[in-house]
Amino acid sequence: MKERYVVTNRVRLFCVEAGRGPLVVLVHGWPEFCWSWRHQIPVLAAAGYRVVAVDLPGYGRSDKPPVTYDEHWVNQCLAGLVHGLGADRAVMVGHDWGGLLVWPFARRYPELTAGVVGVNTPDLPRLPMPPVQFMRMAPRPNYIVQFQDRGPAEWFLTADVRAWLSSVFLGPATHRKDVFPEDVIDRYVEQFLPVGAVTPPLEYYRNFDRNWELAADLPEQVTAPALMVMAEHDPVLSPRLADGMEARVPNLRKVLIEDCGHWTQQEQPERLNEALVDWLDGLPRWA
Image 1 (cartoon, rainbow, N blue to C red):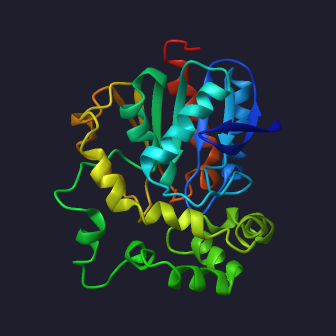
Image 2: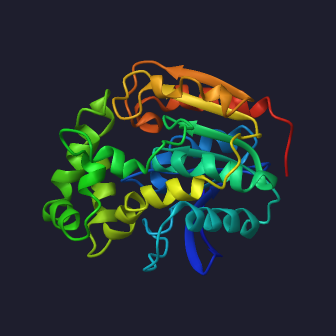
């Protein structure tokens, strides 16, 4: 594996790259960085693919500009990444927030999309009202609502970064807690401990309603080949949320990974790798 930067959309994106062949871009979620794909990168590379795991804008070693981190802007960066890597098309693989990006990416840039994979994150139907407005109607506001106001969320999360990240990776969303020993938590703490490191990732959540507005102008269907990987015990993104996806993603395969919570790449890496390689090998080759 080698490390590199790609300049796109006036920002530097940090990447880890391995292998040769058709391009596969791995897009992480919250609160992670490219390292969350460490179990997938060498396996996909050995299977004959050029694999690039990126730190999303605002995360890790990528630039953290003071901008609006809406889906359109972030996906402009990812489209520029594909071009910056010298490729014409890529398979886009996204987990958690990465999944919320790659489904609209496939609609916004069909000419760049050789295939699209949602890991835990399905392609969701567009709500009839802005999502944060809808969430505020619940009896108890969830964390997304609590993230909306600038300042309080930063204060809460940075008061004890280790405690926050330990609760995320060892909490109720995790089915196999043994895969998150102290040294793994340490790697995540390193990324979010610097002053200001939490705010850009929070801005993704603060653009939920903006992304809802942007989705009104996107095509209804994803035309690219698609894979939806569901995790049996994910309470955040339940497999049931993928019901009916076929209406919006007609060229779809679904895979359910058992004995797995929200952090699929780390809880069941071998099963995820098997599902990815099997699906990728069935695609027409792309460049």
